[in-house]
Image (tube, rainbow, N blue to C red; front, side, top):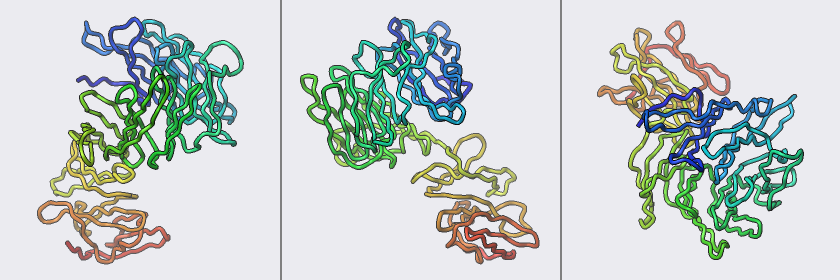
Amino acid sequence: MRNVPINGRIVSLHPFRPLDGLLDVLIIVTERHKVCVLQWDVSSNELITRNASMDIDACTSKHPWADQICTIDPDYRVIGVYMVTSWHKVAKRGLCAFPLDNFGELEKPFVPRMCNLLVKDVKFLYGCDVPTVAVLCQDAEGAHAKTYYVSQTGSVPVTGPWTRDNIDQSAGLLIALPTPLCGVLIVGEELIVYCSANTYKERPKPCFTAKSFGRLDGFRFLLGDDEGRLHLVAVSHENQRVTDLRVELLGETSIASTISYLGNSLVFVGSSCSDSQLIKIDLDAQGSRIQVLKKFVNLGPIHDLCLVDPEKHGQSQVVTCSGGSKYGSLRIVSKGINEKASLELEGIAGLWSLKSSVDEALDTFFVVSFIGETRIFAMNRVDELEETEIKGFLSEVRTLFCHDAVHNQIVQVFDSCYLCLFHYPFFVEY
């Protein structure tokens, strides 16, 4: 395993194998709109850059201000990066296309003509003689699935082989299916739809919002939803036609930002709001079919933090409000990023530290604010973190701010804009 520094925050990373290549290469898109191709060099045993970084801004002459969507043609002829740009405060939407030669080298990018609609997802289709994208978009009349040929010629959009109007407005994810089907799955909150040039088949599914997906094999996929559940989508087909669409709940994981199947029933679930996980799937098991093999600590996103010295050894530690959704927690961290301790708490809105008396040199308490209450934690006599109470401190309200004040007082600010001041020493109950 190698750690390789990248000059930028990666927002999209995709492996692919060039037509004349023996090894996979990586296409990387960064938050600052740079695109490059990396490859492992066997002779030097190092990761090398095959292409100098290309700038998407130079391709569009405008600065992208929204998240990008990266998609790769299944035949590795072109890489597409969809983005929203602004020009004199007018939003312009488009796909920046990077052609690939047979050796996987990026060529001069171009912007194919497409409709200027609100785009939710973009995917290249399988089995097309000309690179073709399916676009899930929405306008005032409803949601639509449209296809376009990715061409450098012409000043008007080149419409692709099919278009479907007025589809499920909750749809937010496209999954391209390989040959012999060569269509797309459109995933909504309550419906899953297969769509192609000559077929439109929809099936009801359990209500959830899909946030990520990973390919298990050719016609089976893993879907992660916004509640941290993992679902299996299976597409049955016969004679180049879809016969059934099936969605099954497998179990619960971290809220997945990315899902990667590693083989041998192993899946990596990457999460941006909780710990990432390595899991094993057993489709024949009863009940939950997911076994968590390993967790990878993720302190982000950090909403608030403070420095404390609970052991009073003169070595401050960082206490963070980490995670999101139902995976919010307090994390106590010492040197580096190794987790010192963890306390599961959902919905943290703020965090402060207080002294036990005005004469104390070190902080003793953590004040944790939630939407409708405030809770206090402290190190007990056996150096364990547990919940406690401070007499005079209002716990049934949301605390916006609290701190030690002058004249031996503590100040607590409520969401109703009142100030509460009370004097040291205050009584603490364990």
